[in-house]
Image 1 (spheres, rainbow, N blue to C red):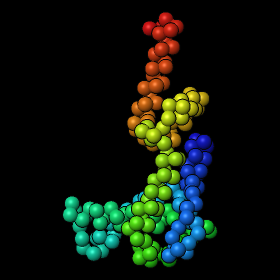
Image 2: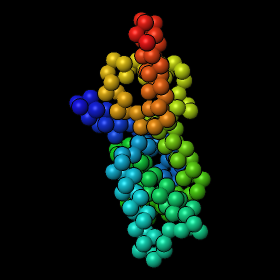
Image 3: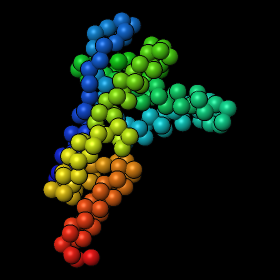
Image 4: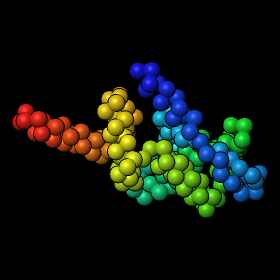
Length: 172
């Protein structure tokens, strides 16, 4: 349990520094991985904007809704060097953010996420073997895997290894 708690706490501290446009003050900003709480707050804020305007989310405006969720996510993920938001509030942040800037920041965020939460599509065989060994040494490690496909691959790998051992020892 202590290991899981340490892993969760460490995950909230994962960030990277990136160069930013002059209109945000130039220099570097930090982009951090969002927690589930951050994502929930961002989603609820986007919902509230549509609700307060009396606009139901529908097929016709889903792109606008998703764009607003992206802005809400980035507002929470991007901070200055001291950990402070880049703008006084999300409205001011939205006014500063161009469509191109938003795309660039999303790319930085996604790269950080991929580097720290490998997917079955991007993980190398060597990295997967390292993960399998970590799970063998400490089965609780599997609780850090959030991808269902990765969990399936792990289960298949471990079950195959067990079946092979049983076959080799004459148990089956």
